Length: 483
Image (cartoon, rainbow, N blue to C red):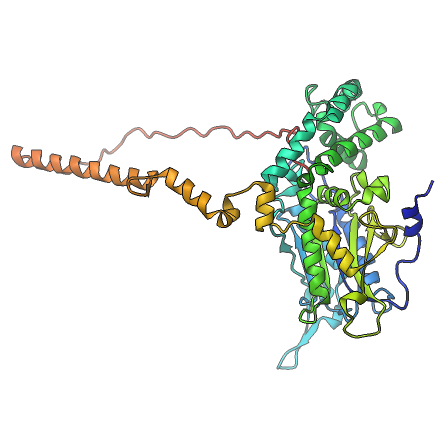
């Protein structure tokens, strides 16, 4: 049965009377290798997925023939003043962003050439390949996100980590942990080379799902594959969805969704730039992991529109926020500006287009700009701001500037010897001691009439080598991290 929201989603996304002023796209990376083994890498399939998604958004926002083209945006050669692209410091996410951009602004051939003063014409390499930088995502992004099981552990927000950990103390968690024991143990022959019997529980629902999901895509043979019936695969997916949404969002503990809150803040601030007469920015693109999608979905009440918004989004999924007006004015007022949210689960394409859904429990897919900003600000937290630091309970690092009294008190507690740190005091004490010892030595030598002579270096001798220990590494798949 179709919900009201799904019926709304089937309506045309734009009309000829609209003028698109700007857009913000948030995308997941493409297909990758399993997180069970490092390093995690983007696959050729993943590259193709995000490339096709980039081409879809080119057709929607960039192509001169599109009825949804962003007003005034460069169509052939990327204008870096109009475009901003960010991704966390992560090879899968950064790589996905770079490939997406080649679909958005493909090689321009002779258009991307330059005539030199001596009359020579130089065409950019690779058929006019366009070099579009991918910037490092700001605060609350994760370092090597796709090498971890869950981003929250690297969010820098202690309160969010604590809230996510609380899921493992919830009634829902313990009920599922107990009721699914036999299910995971029965499938042990499939993954016992990677997960021990002790690890084969609902606690590692996502890690096990990810391992099997990647295997079913890339492995020509899987141990005991007869156990992976359609029903078993669906149960693995359902349990992973419940597990991950439980870690990403909780209505009674909004800080758990800090990744979605930071994203909401960034969306609002960048879209404001798109409608500002002082800015030339028209399109903002950010890449991130599925956990951020889930957090934002929960905060923006999208599960009310469709239960699918509680599931892990597919590879190359994307959501777009486009601002538009039906005014004919070249400088429409804020009262004349609207916002539309669109989402494509998996690679966006003509056969799987980004569809509009209502945000914040609304019954319309189009929100007045002021209403959109008001609702987004209710869930937004600017990364590294005083509000973020307060909500996260973080007072060190970049947050220390907001708590000078606590910082001073901490320094005083660690200090000593008239305000000197323990380390400095120790160094000074050692130097004084050394000076006294050398002074006494000189005195003894002088009184005894002794003198120092240089000893000849031995021709041969034993050489002592520090043993090099064997490097080890381990991965605790039960830790509260995910990506």
